[in-house]
Amino acid sequence: MALEDNGIKLKYWEKEKPSTLVQPKRYCIVNRCIGPGIYEVFALTTFGGAKSFRQMGELGRYFGLPMGDTQWISTTPGLMTIPHIRFGRTFPSFAFAIPCITKVEPTMLRYYTRLAPGELQRLQRYAEDKRKVCISSRKNLVL
Image (tube, rainbow, N blue to C red; front, side, top):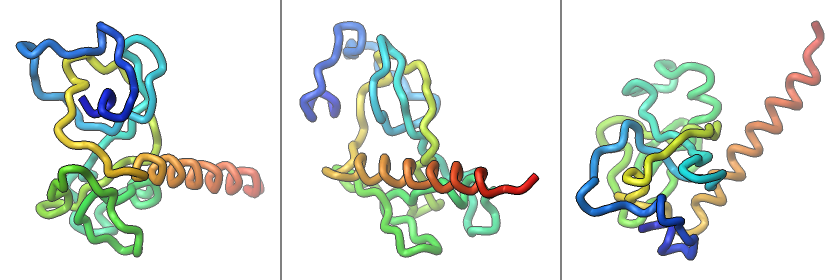
């Protein structure tokens, strides 16, 4: 498993039994484990198959970090994976840089791919920088 490959020890309830492999409801990037079966994750999304910047909502335009080969309006390179998956070839693909807390079934912790070294930290910095700008902007609003 990707987590174990990176030196993160999994509890017995987090380990998958080979016969229980099923497709996840939504792919995501695990940011951290909060408790038994509870994780902070970044969802992966195509923003409804948006093919242009204008087709995305404001949250998507601001908090979407491109994945893989996705060519977008900024010069921000896409998050790279190991092995290289062709994210962004059919539809632009993104990591939604607003983490959420969710229950992840132990059978879903099986990885299909993982982020290249340093990419999780880049996603974490991107999310934190965006959050700080949002908080700063709210303080400057005059009501």
